[in-house]
Length: 236
Image (cartoon, rainbow, N blue to C red; front, side, top):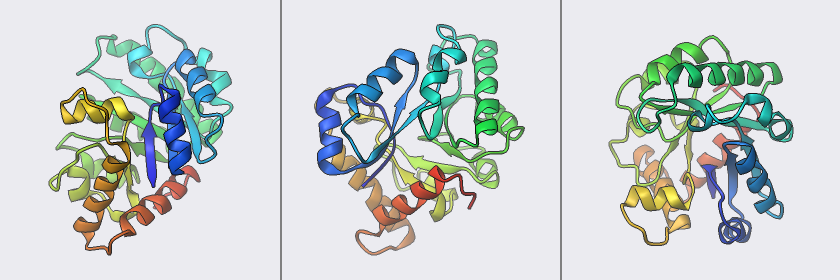
């Protein structure tokens, strides 16, 4: 089972990842979060870490504060721009974003993108830094074809539907599953109840199977192959 982007905030969730053998990319968004993520997932052999200064934190920390953590991981992210859920000035967000895009390009590190309300500006910027990008939980009905043309990978967010723009426009060999973590699953479901984490990932696998007419079980295998290619920086 693949979780290409999640946040780990508890020992209970870390134990679930380890027990279920989920191949997960676990994200740390600032120095404190990155340190906690490393500590919680130390005994999770199937996870890899992804660290980067999130746009929501761009006015409280510096990219330099993240360098020790970025130096210990395979993936940089999630990074990006957000004009919907964030009041950090865009000029501050953009400076931090560009610095990290340049860093990832120099180190040949694939990047996980946070895009919310600034999809076109992000397209302009990543076009200046050729790399391997994963757009997590893309929900904008526009511009996805331009991301596809740049070779981006995409995740299906929790409770994606048959008409999700990622399912409609992205090729099968660039589709991944993600949870964004248990809190995000509960938020997407509009509930405060405990999230059905594994069930959410299975649901996304089934969406992939129905979209491309695949046999049962193939959705997870496709996501696993795509995750491996993304982590290795492969363009497809």
